[in-house]
Image (cartoon, rainbow, N blue to C red):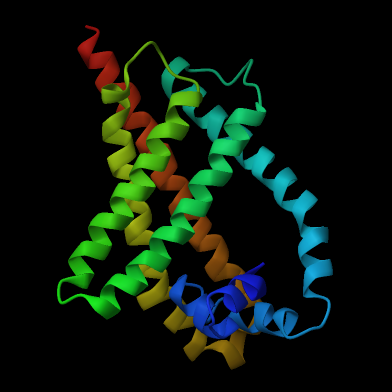
Length: 212
C-alpha cells in the first residue's frame, strides 16, 4: 500500500515512509516490496488482512471503552459502521501527516498550522468514532475532552517516533536488526494504546462527576 501511495504522490517509497514517521522502522521492508513488479497483487491480497485487522482493532478499542464507561466488556459488538469509521480515522491520520508536510513546505507558519490541522483532523475523527463506541448517554460535548487527548497524544507519539525511536533504531540497526525494529514498533503501539485508554477514561470520569 505504501508503494502505491508513493507513486500517486510522486515520491520515493523511503520518502513516503519518512513523512509518515516510519523511517528507520519499516522503510527498508516496504521499500523492497514496493520495488517489486507485483505490488498490485500484494495490495489486493492485503485488503482482507487489513479488514480483519481493523475489525479486531475496533473490538479491542470498543472493549476498552466499555470497561471505562460500564466496568465490563461483555456484550461488545463489532459493527460494520464502527469498523468503517475506524478505517476512516486511520486514513485521516495519514492525510493529516501529508497535509502537515505540504504546509511546512509552503507556509512561513507551516509548523504551527500543521500541528493545528493534525489535532483537528485526528481529534475530529476520534470524536466521530467515540460516538459509535460504548458509552453512557452523553452528548458529543462530553466526548470532546477525550478526542482532544487522542489528537494531542497521537501527535506526540508520532513526534516521538520520528525524532527518538527511529533514530535509536537506525543507530543500532546493525546490532539489533529486525528485532530492534519489532521492539520499536511494539513500543509505539504501547504508547498508542495508553493514549486510547486515557482518552476513554477521561471522558468516563468527567461524565461520572457531572452525574453526581
